[in-house]
Image 1 (tube, helix red, strand yellow):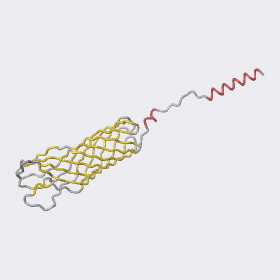
Image 2 (cartoon, helix red, strand yellow):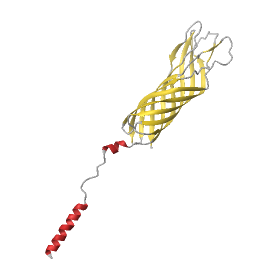
Image 3 (cartoon, one colour):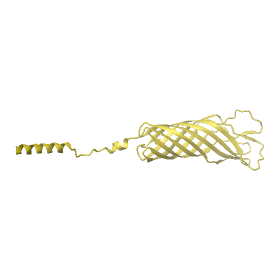
Length: 233
């Protein structure tokens, strides 16, 4: 009887020890770093400088001076993988440049709603810091165009006119860094450029002999620095 009791106790202890698995579950580091959110949405602000092509005067040249413009808007993107995404944007851009000729100085102001569709190449969106390169087509819809004379004593007999076509088409390009500041929130800093493909100047309207269209065969070029916030889900 005593021997049977001891045998039963040994069998019970053996079963109890085998039921407890002391080996902890190990999650592969590759699994931890391979997850990423598919969809992201955010906002962007831009500081922008603009380059325009001007109509040459018979008795002088036009000197252009940089003026800082701005942009603001939002974007929506889809991560196809850790290294590639498709991104659409909607941006309001206020562009400006000063032009001096015959002793007179004018400021040209253009306003656009820009809609770029971009391919995004990422170093790795699952990492705390991600390098991105973007490029793709952009459509611009003109919302305004004006010119103001900044000279205090304007003696020019020419009537300066800025005329711009309603649409623009160009190639958008750029690069930036994304910094993950929270689990699903990233701060972006970078550069964005636009290379215009079509002539935006519109000289088709009738003009008098003293009317001067300041833009001529002008393809829009812009260079911007930006900051953005993106929420991932």
